Image (cartoon, rainbow, N blue to C red; front, top):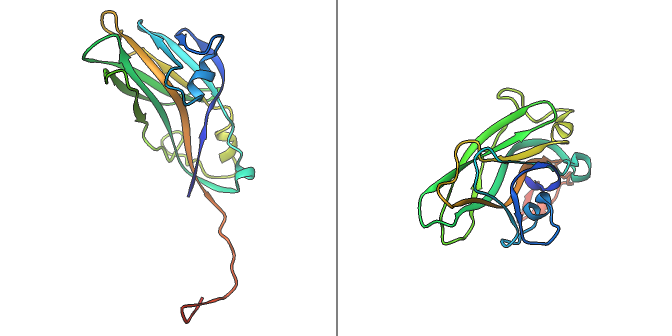
Length: 185
């Protein structure tokens, strides 16, 4: 099995603040690996919705999709304890496919990694596999929001990176019969 990360490549909407990289966009700071560029908010009901790269099934030689899961890294800023919850939603143009909540904690201002549940279906029963598997992964959106709660006091929710990881299978390689350690294969 192989994996590929579908990175943010556009911002649909964003009312979080952007830190670092003058003139930067939310998708730009969340697609890079620089912990100094990020999005942050101190308010409840803030949303950052991102377009993701398309899944190039034929270019990757994919014969099927095993699972997908989201990834974010982040932390609670301007505080010495407690946590604040953020939702991560995977969406397509028509609906929210799933939502998970992660608790960002104070960690000496170091981002912590959060992986979502590996999903083998896109609606609870329909597998990602099939002739339309690639198209199901094209046009995906990833949203990070503070709908669950308001970060306490003067603290802020900070998100440093976000993407969707796709685990997929590739075609098998045909080989001729061979002799290996005296055995015919």
